[in-house]
Image (cartoon, rainbow, N blue to C red; front, top):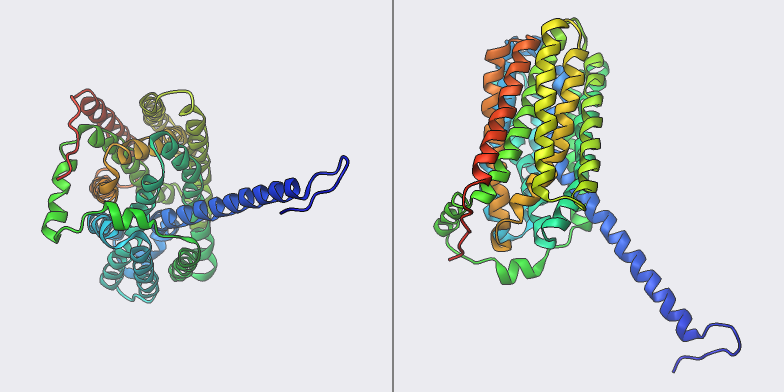
Length: 428
């Protein structure tokens, strides 16, 4: 029996219970903080791997004695590697667990980053760049799957809106950091930094990420590899899932197309790598702001309404970019400021479309749904990156027209799919 005291002093029982509750709340907050930190870091790997060496592209052209289009092919191959490996990672994560797969993938990412830094020819660099993408690809798949495992549609939108601003910082810090690393230590130091980042992610995943054993042992069917692949056919019949995925693909393709073409626009305008890095800060601030506003809006508005608002901002920004590029073609701000409006819309699109897509399928297929969505996302971006270099050649007006076209096609595709009769995913 617990001892008590007399008078106005609280009983020992009351004191103990109060402190136990406080300790439990503190532990929950501590666990939630590290859970979010791990989600942010594994979600940042592929984005950081894409953006950090943007300011170094012109220097790398000189080092490898190659053209703009040839060095841009490293982005196309990287995104294709991300796309194809995500189909496999989604299946493997459903079958063998989230934590084991992410650790293996991050080890590959570290090794490939090291060999990218040591590459002497463009061919060697491209080979190890593909391997780097295969390692990085697990992050975004498993990130979405883990959140879908634990939260419903509205909660998932809130979690995505919480972590996406921090993931988006990779788009700001990456080019800025890459510009300084390139200026002071050469472009190879960028890939040594990525190797160190991969090691940090591995360490934190190993310590703080706990496997959801219920998902892995009770809900996920242990089918043959053939049946695992056949499960993807269910996803293509779910128009609700596909509509959200088209919205995500459009926003991501716009962002990637701008990221890979804008360094050559700025280079033609006479800017150096260190200066270019600072040009991406406004873009990322706009993205973070969009995420924060979307997080507030989803508490009061439907997911679909917030998503449509995101498209409205993106279309407005794309139209402004075309107009400004006509009259101020030699000013970097003629594309930076309108692109910030586009990316503000992306801040609405990314968390809402991710949450909508991942919660529109049964939890048993969350890994494969995440992988399939990621594959479409990166394939679309890879195709657009391959086209924008040939279409724009560092011309701001051509780049602006290309970007506006992607936004409009994405919006029309999303609206067409969202208005069709929903086809529900059937589990066999």
